Length: 625
Ligand code: ASP
Image (cartoon, rainbow, N blue to C red; front, side, top):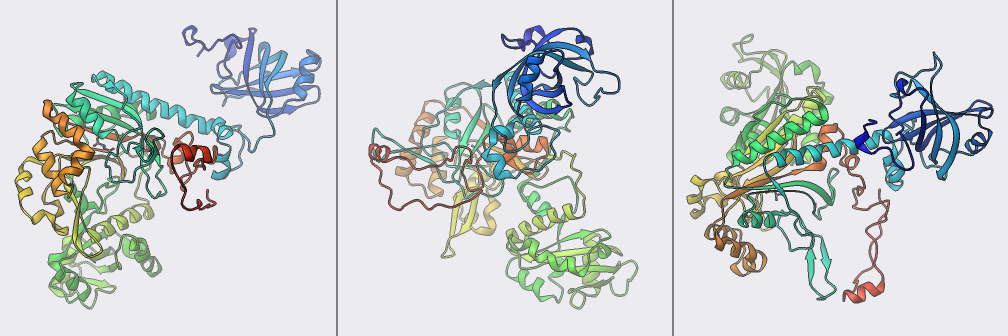
């Protein structure tokens, strides 16, 4: 670390707190750092000095330097001090092999306090064991960020972004900034808006993504663009969302999906090599959306474990189980998950809890069958089962069913029956729950995949039961070539047929989390106009909102595509952390506030007047963490 070229040596210090070793014995040094710990042994004070690079022990003795000793007696934890002294080997038996600097200590000749600390709200030292609540940590984020464990996360975050940048530079990407004060970019969330003082009544929108600008940069001929960029989405916050977040945003000209995916795989390989020191397996598996949904019940499947979903509608349609046959008659499906050896593992109480697990996904229940004897062992009955299906799924149908899901003696089979998307989602939730409960997930595993061929349109019913359409990705996404003629048909516009028109859209998924998503874009004005019209965006509205993009397409637009990766999420996965707040230096609470600065806050009357704004209702004040 004491590399001459790194300029650790400054006018104020000769070394950092992490670099002294036995070989430095006898050297005169000047160190600066925070008081991490201090122990008074009557006449001799031991102080651990800490900075970003590590921790070193300094010794102040009243006999050697009475003045320094007097100053040190007044030291508090987290005071910033400058120490002059000489390095000596620690006496045998007092060395600390766990500490980089553990062979040495610095005998102090002089000490000065550069920055005094008030009593600290919680201990910073890595040796401190007490748990600190999130609210306290965020309120005192500066002290929190000083904790070595917390600081380490941001050093890793830096490694992630710098590995991304290096990889992209290697592939000739250009870093170009796009505006933050701009117009709405549709990514499916609400905009944060900024009032404009110069033209009262007009507003900028903060970008939900730089989508349109990066497409313009392709039309402008930059060929490959990237940016580590803040994006803003005003969403009701779920546990793991932040109103502002960082994306690695990229765009490339003259590419197909595969080319964008190659770059991303190369970049992610660098990231995991630089941070975790592992080689990830490439190429990533590709899963069409329809397959991801039918086999894993999710468009971000966790591939670290099996428990695949199997559709058994065709078989159970012939059973006497009304719940199943009724659902199928109404156009729904029945899906099953087999748990090997699950019959013993799951008590009646466990099974009774399962409906609660899938409730939020909209499923009404979970049916189950414990296989007492597989079809091979009890051929006359087609297998012996217990549970609600026992009476109604019998004989040949039972045999076929158990064989289809591969269930033998001792297994448990769980079923969900519902409309296709509800059933799939619920089975996906159930599958993830089972993966965790049965401890099938290796926390060190890295299971990447690409989910491809997303439906172009999201179809949902409005309050009157009428189908409504929204882009599944965003309205600039290119349909799969052979599906373009289908745009002329009405078929795609129903709920159950939403996947008929596929998009050249892809998500990169890691361990059941979406790391990022992108697509090949429409670069043809006519097709873009047609998609807008199918989405119910009138010509006038399209012109008003996206006219600048459509006009740019008139002057020679290359085919292009790109992707954006969520940096916060990526760092979270690299570090295997549960909360996204842990990887953002100054995060917001789930309620969207910054406990450090008190944002968001009211603005004063003068500002309101300048902006020609009037507050209609006093802001509701909620206390939240
Ligand atoms: N703009 C998209 C997003 O932010 C990413 C992309 O299509 O490149 O999700």
